[in-house]
Length: 379
Image (cartoon, rainbow, N blue to C red; front, side, top):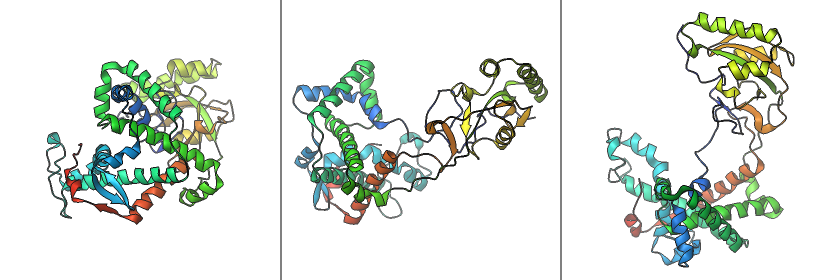
């Protein structure tokens, strides 16, 4: 029998809200590491501390002193705002570049001078995308000001204290992390921190103010109706990957089953002999709903009573010895297929706020000025 790759017993489309254990076989949805942590942990902390020292603490409104390269809804968009979003714009458009120019040299990176079918160079497309991102931020800041929100001095000081802590922790690595995250200057660094804090302030204002909530509620995704039929199991896996033959895997599984049925502590057998790395991060077992696990595992679990041990259960991953257990009462512990994840109200509202300002930029339209072509870009 061909050996199977050790991916665990969970279907690849499964998600779980809580991240538990570094060796688990869960698959999580994520867009990468939290940007705020990366910013806090970057070399940017050095320039932030310098900025404080020399009295150059930067505020978003100061962008108005820079050269205007575009306008949205009558508001100037300065070159510094576009420059600050150029790295993210490059990320957003990278797939378009490699799709349009499949013969481009990957080692040379993105060539901003190549022309797309619509007649725009990739550089122009990237600048327009960076301008769009900057416009969203500007309109969100303007709205916050209109309803009386700002970043307080205490919040700014807290940001700086966090930066100082990470500066001391990471030392010489700050500069590299700063560059890797596309942080281009102390102005962008402080602006990014303050913008994140303003977003959090806006979120709390919206959630606590019915009048403000009504502005964004129509743009929220509907709350997902969650499957309440939750079952749970822990198991000893005899993984095909760890044996030369299927017969050897079967012999090992039979030994484990014999010991389990003889009354040895099941949790100890899982911990000492089980070959599913996901069990390490889930010592109380997997709690899951239909469609999460491979079918053989799910059906065998459903056939058991709480505390009952199965016989040998074969799947593409190996041979399982399953004990059904009580499911967790914590929603974050429950594993669900894609589209059935629990999304907290705060996260749904964050998405709604973002969507509102994206639509406002699209509705208002952006006026691009000739000076936009002079804004430097980051790959």
